[in-house]
Length: 329
Length: 301
Image 1 (cartoon, each protein chain N blue to C red):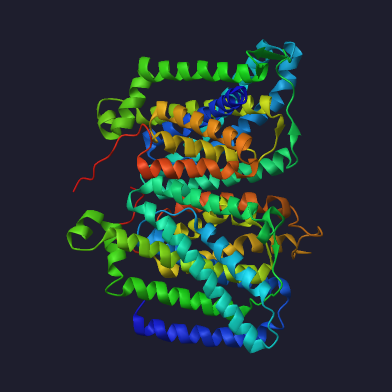
Image 2 (image 1 turned 90 degrees about the vertical axis):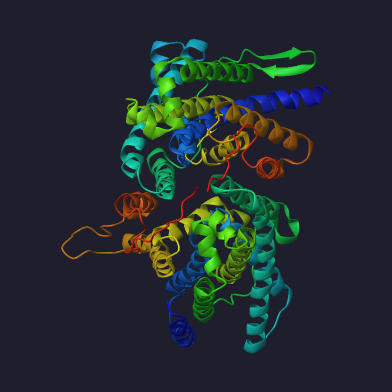
């Protein structure tokens, strides 16, 4: 993605988001929720792609950062009660950014062990951090503990989702394309060669974790004000896995592919759910002919995942073979 | 002091179950360098195999008895070994030459499939695991209470660890396993059938996971299709803690995690016990980045 084009894209998407927001008032709550989820998935997957795809680290704890952002922003908006739309918007933006910064601090804490750990060891440590954040939230009575936290304001709308998705893509793609950002790819391709060239792998790895965590925190804020109810268990290991799957299916380090995978994998379970509700298929006599999908939806999802990996192991949307593919080593 | 020893015994029983699961992770990792995320679900399938086999065994043998329990254990190990072989053959073998991340995602897919398929096929509601062992009661040894189930768990685990040690160190297949773990290409050139060795490793690991599942269900007799997730994760932590790919390390890691967890649950707070396993792991990895018994790998340019 060329930088000049990227700016056009950014402005275009922001305008589209603003327009969609006006139009979105007529949308039923469920499709609106699904579209918002797509935006959140894009923010999560693209920011994870910076850590896993571009920098070649392996993080399994992205949902933990999301949890930090979600809880911090929810506590802030629950505390203040602004009435006007402009003030409320400003407050939401401030809460989102605060959540993002809190998550970035968590990212810094996770980034530090990466100085010494590699591959599977790093994967399990990030997983551990994610789980620790979950258990701590479960034991924090101030935010409801295991009972969960109600979020009063449903600020998230199409505009915020589109805007943040666009900004995330713009920042991550722009960062990696910049002179400074080439260092991420250098660290991924060959750490020793990179440090011989005067690039500090440590700095780049920590930067990747901090930036990735910041955006995951923003996504968490969006999520909190979209579902309006948070439980620590919603940010478990399986949530992290969902985003890792998006990154790998999209092709590691392939931004456009990761966005497509995020859209596809958010729609797939919902699409199967909708298909199950079809009242009548043309040419089929039975009422609700696809009702069996209700129970087998997640089985189909996992089978499709296995099948996709067996048939397109390089990622669903990577058509070029890139030299120096990242590996777990 | 007595309370401490009591917690230690409880931790030992839990830790030996985790050790059995961790061994499966570490064996597969040692040979294929890949984390088999579906391993925790084989633990669950082992418990369910025991649940469905027990009524059949009860027709031939008196059931709450040691012989009956051992037959149930053996049958569910066999069932899971076959399932493990099928998973390896159809999900992992076609991807053998792809990047390891691809296999990792496939393993996650298999794991989701087993969990959701299990919920659909076996029912999501928890089931009561049948009584396999007669309650021989509890013994008080120097103020320490030990129940017979815990003794059986520790005894069976020890026997299995010894058997595994014998297989890996003293048999032809064990030597082949070590050769493939060391260098698959060189082993293949020396006439080792790597496909067979890998399949055997999966069968062996799955059988151990099944045994752990049955032993777990004997102690905590409520089983459901999602029961494998958390023990699986903790066993993975145990394997990494001991140095992944290292068999004694996995057993040691399992015991450490089991004992720490019971200690924390007993002395600090049971709500924090799930996080403690990970906290211990992070601290140990910060000091020894390749695990307690893992070999240090040097970077080569």
